[in-house]
Length: 162
Length: 302
Image (cartoon, rainbow over all chains, first blue to last red; front, top):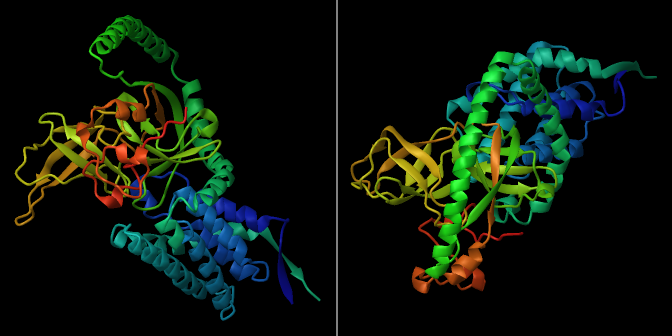
């Protein structure tokens, strides 16, 4: 059996922080509508490759960080990230990690759930976003995924387990 | 989440803690842009720099003379006010701060500055942008950084006054960087395209008579049956391009002193649960939902 291990201690933390950094690079407004949530993609990546090492508390902590950075409701991103990790781990058990179409389906579902929850919370707190443009990251997540998945592949090494 | 929504002060320590943790990350993300501005500044054209320098020197000379004149006027003003037994005029000091990050959340227009409580920044401090236009107010302070809510945030509102007619209104943010909505203006009142609105200072937070927004062409719209007009105005600053802002401190007298010296004609609204100082605060016509952002007593820490 082959199990993946982090390349160095703290590799998961590093990728999550990189994702958070990518989320906060300033972009012109018409571009930022297309920005996928890179933390979500990182969490899905780790759920697919190393589901034994994924920690819901880490997801929650990163979510709270994201909330303070974007000054959204405290817990909005945290809840989203925790659910993303949970669903990604659950769904990843039902598919082969190498099949690309299956991966796309998983990302579509998981990112969709994440965005739906965010939309609900915003709707309840009276902070409603701009119509259909809100859903654009769903598409761009799929486009970015192969590249991002490939880059994050550097951060783990496969090990043969006895 | 519910706690944060209902009672934001309860979760403030958590926010501050996480902000301190997030600050290095924000600095790292900002570093390439910072480097870019520095490098382009370093390699700027010598001729261009020289001409700019000359122009700035000339401007400085002009301003220094004007400042001398101002000082004389200020002294005179203070003396006259003393004679007339009017309370002293509020003065201001400024510090420059740099925007290092902006919120990506839709509808939120919150930016992070690189000055914090170590530099004397406090909550509900007014922030100005170039040209003395109002930028926003500080909503969160950590030792190294602070978060500023821009005028265009969905949860922000500022009392304004029409420069031409003197009519008062409330400019609330829409979540878009270039549109402010003017609320509680009765249909049929005298507002035209191109009218400039300045802050009225009724909230005791924003200094009066600083420019805020200008009504856009075709910005005044009436819907049949609606007692109020729909007025859209454009802020006088480009929020997306502003990198340097001015933090503003009031210097004596404090608003509380001013209020106690003011004649009782201002008729404060009876508020049963508030403290005595809160009662003295002049409440303007702001709806209660906006009260969390602007409509509070200004406490001066220094």
